Image (cartoon, rainbow over all chains, first blue to last red; front, side, top):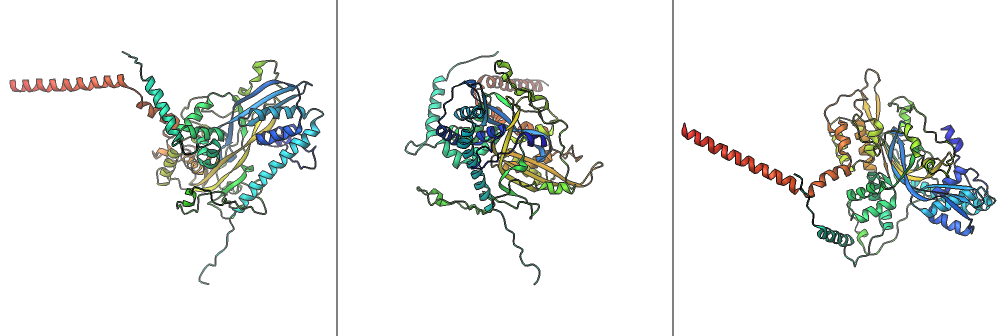
Amino acid sequence: MSEKAEEHNPVNVDNSDPNAISDRSAWISLLAQSPAEDLSARWSELGLAPKFTYLRRPEIGLVMTQGRAGAVGERFNLGEATVTRCSVRLATGEEGHAYALGRSARKAEISALCDALMQTKHAAALATKVLAPLAYAQSARREDAARKAAATKVEFFTMTRGEG
Amino acid sequence: MYVATKGGEKAIAAAHRQMAEERRGDPKIPALTIAQIREQLSLCVDRCMTEGSLYDRDLAALAIKQSQGDLIEAIFLLRAYRTTLPRFGYSRPIDTGSMAIVRRVSATFKDIPGGQILGPTFDYTHRLLDFKLAAETEGPRTVADRAETPVEQSVPHVLGLLDQEGLIQKEKTENKPAPDLRIGRIDFDHEKTAERPEAFNEDTPPDLTREPLEFPASRALRLQALARGDEGFLLGLAYSTQRGYARNHAFVGELRIGAVAVEFDMPELGITIELGEVTVTECETVTQFQGSKSQPPQFTRGYGLSFGQTERKALSMALVERALRWSELDEDFVGAAAQDEEFVLAHVDNIQATGFLEHIKLPHYVDFQSELELVRRMRREIAEDSAGRDLSETAE
């Protein structure tokens, strides 16, 4: 687990610090977790149209998800999920890769381009205009869900007991 | 002799067109959209994903629409579709301990860290039809409450409490480390190296979708088979254990539903990323165990895990999973169906079952013709035989 924690820092971004997402797996994960429409809208706003070639055109496939017996024990195969991946190379040489649940070819392509651009001078603009808003939206979604769940938490009352 | 016949092409095409018309129903009624099914029939979408063993809400909704709501047919469509796709690899095991909780209850402890969170549930409803839902126009929207303080980011497993005291059977942790995919970059100039997912194989648990089921099955294989198994079949078997067939009085230690990240080792970069989130239901049951020569009296676990919000399925799975562990726990095999691994695993898959069952609707004219001939001949022989005996009897 410690090894995993090292290589995979959780996304921790606030809008005021565009440089906060500096870890490659964090931004690839954030792009993967963002709804295709949101990503597409942010990408259009950014207005970059870099020249690139496909290393791998958007491709739909499967990843077998795994669970653990008793939540903590041996691994087993739970079932598959659809995943779309894409790899690109910018005219300037940087390579970008994307994998995400679902079947959105457009999202995979934009994500791969973002990954590649994060290695260029456009990184700061991308972090501010694409990644930070996506991270903000993600944490807002999560907080809303967690507050809805918390509203259904049971408060127990101790009833008076005995003959009194 | 094998006789092939042809025919019925026009009838089949017409039958399919009729089916398409029936599926659409009255054209004066607006057609269902995939989004409507996905959003408003989400629990049957979840069931199709679980038993179709394919997590994709839109595909499941499409399958439900195409199958006119025949869920086994929808599951069949999903299973067929998945065979057309390449497998990119295996995820890391999902960490249900860090689940973003939607619902989480325990029937064994009242006060648990994180609390009892009911979430969106049918429990405690009165099961009275709500005729307001039948109104043509949508009434005022009900909006869920929001608490000031959100649920904690990581809510500990209830069975961990028993585990700390050593009162529950320990789960085996793995001997082998998780697969290390940091095998360097993929060179895209060489096509064949671009497909590396099979590099996982050595360290992965057995996979039903790759190798046929063999008995005795490992626990990992049983869990996979149960996870994609038919909810109705598992419900019946689980109920049988409660009624005394296998005698496992189970408590729900914990039932939790929520979103978990799916982590994946990206072969191109050798880093672990999150592919996104899936909603899963997890059920851990606790059963009293008398102990054996090697183990002191303690509680044992049954485990259920399924896609989406599918708690009846996860609970049934946990009870059956526990019953199937009799041998590992030195319990007696009492001949109960739920204990019989071969019986359970060979019949739990509704697509296998329906494929075999429903094929007998298809023409078996020649097979039956031979049976008919046989029965006629046997009757003739018996008739001749008894006629012969009558003759010989009169002769005597």
